[in-house]
Image (cartoon, rainbow, N blue to C red):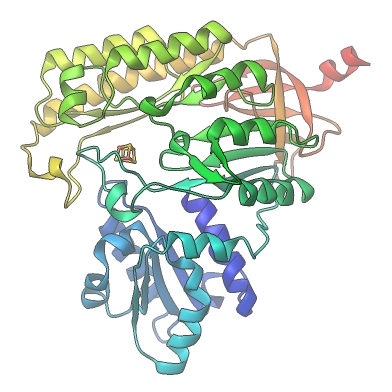
Length: 432
Ligand code: SF4
């Protein structure tokens, strides 16, 4: 979502004359669009500002803006701690960034703007074309969260669940497809909690997917991140009726133990989670799942951890994320005792080893076979291209004349844990 927000921030500031530069020293303004999910997020922002400061020593100071969830969480504290920061803007108020910049130059006064104006934000954004212009683009359809998992800051930094207008989303999708997008990923902190009332109708995530599935030039549809509680049957049914909806799903579970899920306030249990997997697998047997795992959540016993390992082996997750629990200030879990750091590290290594082996075995399965790849880019100075399989695995392949945006069949000739490698040459001859 930060990538989407960053692109939209650029769409906004370009209306007052700003352009992107890759030459750091040329910049008049730095916008650090921050994420609060990762460990030590706040410290990383200060380190980055330290680097900017160093680069601009003896030069004219650039305008320094911190936006995103760290800005929301830390607010005016940031300016108090680091006077090099000129402006702090929350993730629900970045649509005002151009006015705030102009205001700053008029009054020469530092600005903190962290209102939860999500309605105003999307009202403003709909007036500006989304210029991402990529083969694979994002559209935010939902923001915020009402679930309040005990370890998570999102409900505090992004605010309550909000769903954008159905029409606005579809218009944005057409804008993107008309400028070359072939794959759309629908985004939300709880994307499948999307729930919009308009024109006497109730629109769900399934309504959006069905509408996107009708767009001729769009080839692939994905959505992330989903909560198991909101994986409703109408959404699961889309895997049957919408051929452009890709056969992989990122569905965070965090732990395979019901005891820990309860302590986390996750609002789902393992049985429910596994029932979703089964329903989807009944529709498409070779469907792939990825997930998020927290190791060493306060109160986790060895037995609880073993239940997570058992679940991972049972489902065979690919492309997953795993971390040792680390407290986020202000969340209920931050007040709990953290387990032994060394033990948690051993557990994490064990869990990640299993995930890596599953991923490796999954990639090995492609060997000698041909698979459909959406071409995203040509590698610089090489006759090689990069794209992704239907299940998101990156594929680097040789080709004489394919173009970004095409769907091509690639024969896989080698692999590692993260990537597949192949060629489309013989495949083209075969097709001819
Ligand atoms: S559902 Fe996701 S975004 Fe919401 S509180 Fe839980 S982890 Fe955070």
